[in-house]
Image (cartoon, rainbow, N blue to C red):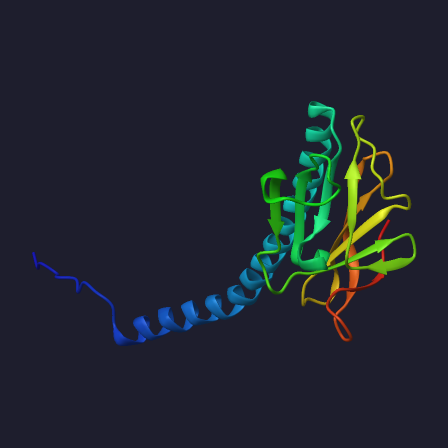
Length: 183
């Protein structure tokens, strides 16, 4: 009886085929992964905005005081400050409850009150959770991707916050310019 020894390991051709297949899988997966990162970044920013609005409303109801939200550096696309006025109708450092800053440079935000685009937004929640915005405040968040990838946050005078995902963003002119909502 003959003992047959089998070779162990890979041949050069098998190694080259494995490397080629790995390269193809990486080439297909990287663009999808990058889109996933962009989508998560936009979702995180949107969730931070919604959480801040809900925090301000609940703090106003809990404390039975007016809680004010003001744009950072007179531009809401930089973020917003949540504070309780102690009576002088202006912000003082010790009145600050929370600050939300936009952390991602490629997430653009535009704000609208009614049909008017605004940047320096100041509004408040009263002790029953209603806002002083008058017309609905609409925040449109978009990134550099084409298609229905944006998100829209609407804050109604009643204090209710509504999220509309998958709005169209026009990145050809301005990454934050919203073309239409997808209701």
